Amino acid sequence: MKRKAPEINFLRKQRSILMLQSKRLYLIQTLSLMTLLAYGVVLIGVISYSAYLGFNVKRIDKNIESERAAIKQLTNVRAKYLVLKEKTAAIMGVSSSLFKHQEIIEKVISLLPDGLAVQGFSIDENGDVVFSASTANPDMIDTFFENVERNKHDERVPITVADVSSVRVDEEGKYSFGMTLTLNPKMGE
Image 1 (cartoon, rainbow, N blue to C red):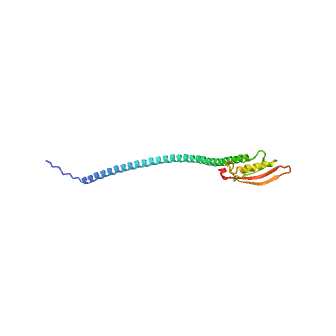
Image 2 (cartoon, rainbow, N blue to C red):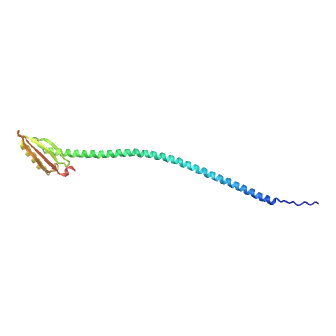
Image 3 (tube, rainbow, N blue to C red):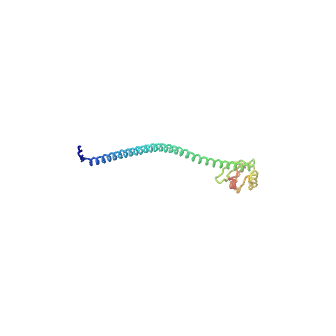
C-alpha cells in the first residue's frame, strides 16, 4: 500500500486569515452600505421636511399678507367710525342745544303781551336771554314785567334774574327797552 504522502499546506493559515478578512470586508461593506442608505433616508427626510416647512412658510406669509390687508381695511373703517362718532356727538350737542334754546325762546315769548314787538333776541353760551322790544303803549311793558315777576318761580320759566339794561322813549312816543333774563341752570338740563 502505498502510503499517501502527507500534504503540506503552507497557505492554510493564510487562507483562514484571508477568509476572515473577506468576511470582515463583506461585513464592513454591508454596514457601510446600510449606513449610507440610512443617511440617504435621513437626508431625504430632512429635505422633505425642509420643503414642507418652506411650503408652510409661503402659506403663512400669504395669510399674514391677507390679514395685513384686512387690518388696513379695518383701520380705514375704524378711522371712519371715529370720525362719524365725533361728528354724531357734535351734531347731538348742536341738536340738544337747539332744542334747549328753542324751549327757552318759546317760554320767553309766552311771557310777551300781544302789543309788545321784539326787535332783537339772542341767547348767550350761559343761556342768558338778551332781547329788546318796543311798544306804543307803556302798559304793555308793565304787563310784561308783571308776567316776568309772576313766572319767576314757575317751573315753566325759571327766571333767576331779570335785568333791564335800557328804557327809551323816542319822539313819536314809542317806548323801547333792552332786557337780560338769567334763567335757572336747571332749565338747560
